[in-house]
Length: 282
Image (cartoon, rainbow, N blue to C red; front, top):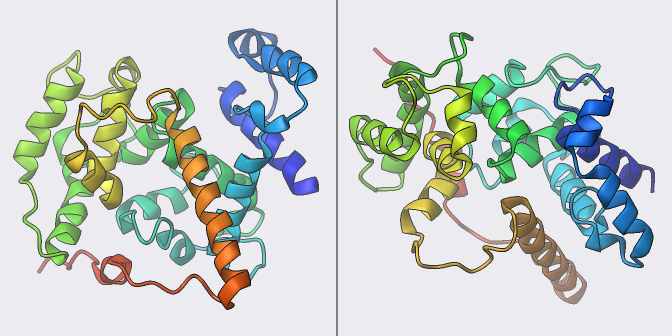
């Protein structure tokens, strides 16, 4: 019960408290839908219908994902733990930036570790890259120079490891120059060759695709293979779609565990990706 309440508070602060100082201003409250959601919640019997903040199913997914990574169950996540997220979907370079606290200062009291609050910010940003908090989170991650613009060499820094991981799966990676051309066409930045946070916010769906191309291999593949005519799940946000699928997976695994004692043994490319570290330059 306490973890559920804690998670709801973090979700509210994530979406409403844009300044991320733990204090919601009147202006932030008016810009949000929190009051409307609270009013609707008062009329609902099922808390899961309040999808933005209070869904118990969403809490269950977040907590279980944290628990899966926290193998020693000390309620802390280390860098190597986060590398296992999504079956090693993320590149080590972007995880290093997260643990350098570039997108957001950790609230964890243990240096070099991620606490539950930090993880909630991460998973909400990772699983829906179209929201303003998420775009800000990942922009700060990619902005190596911390100057408010993304340039080609910064994007190439992240894509280089992605290309290496693709090659490790015996597939031909797309050349970075072609990636850059595609990204420029997708985002149409106001200043050629420079991508700003404003550019990302103008086209959040395209920005989400850009971010996945750079550092999330599984979502990159999904983007490449997706039929643009497929509109299934279009009425849901990326977060809602992820939470629905994960809740179904967790429920199925629980049923398998009860039936056979262990329903989690499977083999996929995650072991290959775990070893696919970019080779050091000579």
